[in-house]
Length: 115
Image (cartoon, rainbow, N blue to C red):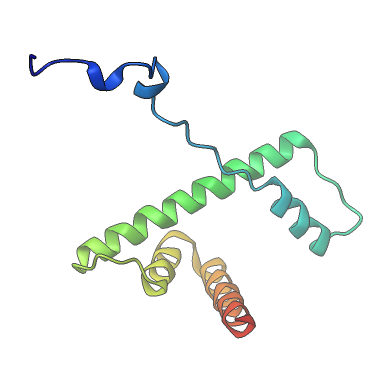
């Protein structure tokens, strides 16, 4: 038997060689829930929801990559809340960053108190 035999792939067909497709994270339901809290009498179109979804995904990716860079720069292998908080302060301007950090801290405290 030769070393380049394809016995291991028999019966698998093409599926065995394909990668799984990653599902795209959709935030539409959460965007709608937040809108309901802030403006209960206002709706949102599917196009506007799609734009908001892209915005949320973009901000999430920016915070994640900046947090990763900060952890790597500080020779850490784990991203903690400190890296995320610093990334938010670096990415968002002035008062928006302060408000975001305050709300996130509030949410974490609420989450940990529920456990």
